Length: 285
Image 1 (cartoon, helix red, strand yellow):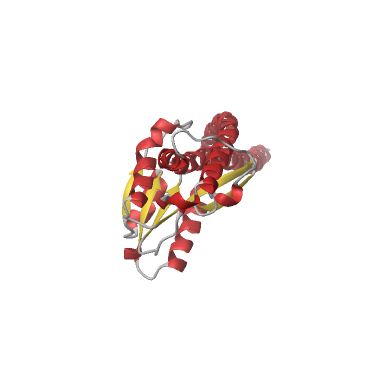
Image 2: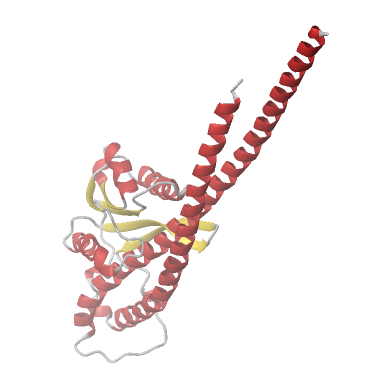
């Protein structure tokens, strides 16, 4: 049985841990609030650029842009968005598992696809297992700007345009609420569903619709990636907040349990001392 000193040390150590996890919970809560606001603020821009692209694409049927047309698939790219750090519950593992399951179902060989990783967790997972990770972005801030991922987003879109791969899927965690996040798959390229989202709004094009699509379509694809990153960041901070709350609650339960054990052991020790004192006094009589 552990000594009173050992139990006391464990209580003190657990209290220190609970203080750390409580602080991390509060920090993650603050970050989540801001990240959620960023993700929601980006939605109107996404909706508007989608409307404009859809309207232009619908108005230029004879000048279909290569990014709007499906082609025979020789190679696929998967862009997987995770975090750089753990301690976020199932946030990273859920996204990685969803992406890996899709890869395993669609392909017979790792040579049939490439991976673009945003976040250290995804990069390390796939590299260690021998997957072809052609690009990665690590060390993004908690509240990323588009400039932070501009290079990797443009490279991902450019590799489709130049024929390096023929389709691009994206995997990230969609933020629903502070306690609900859904691992999500989204097909980024080719943009085959854009016409279905066309609204009744009409636009006059200057220069031609084809010339505008040449500039706007890559920007639209890049904006999809950035929007998913913002969504994922909100999920990441929410997941870490929940994980740290659970850790704090578990630590507090352990402290209560250890305190009970400590008090019982201390009471037993005191009772034993009293018994020995009484016994010794009786022997002197």
